[in-house]
Image 1 (cartoon, one colour):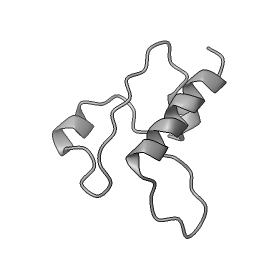
Image 2 (cartoon, one colour; image 1 turned 180 degrees about the vertical axis):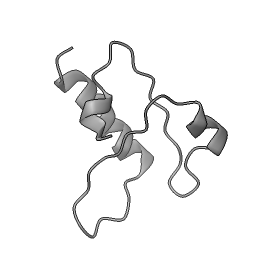
Image 3 (cartoon, one colour; image 1 turned 90 degrees about the vertical axis):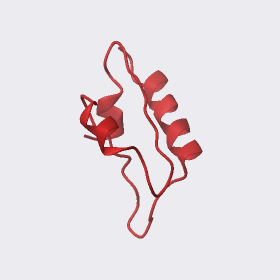
Image 4 (cartoon, one colour; image 1 turned 135 degrees about the horizontal axis):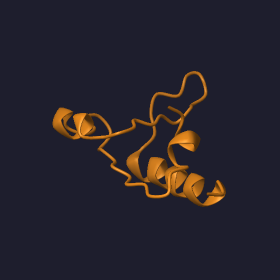
Length: 64
């Protein structure tokens, strides 16, 4: 689901993996939701610090 939708719950745990290897398959299976950050065409990926900053921003932006 898009990141903005994933950040609306009362409690949210944010798991971030390094660019390339990401999170382990075991960690991915243990999650309830997998969120994606929409990117412009031609954009390959974001570094983990940028992805975290966007997630924290969405968390405070969206009223609960």
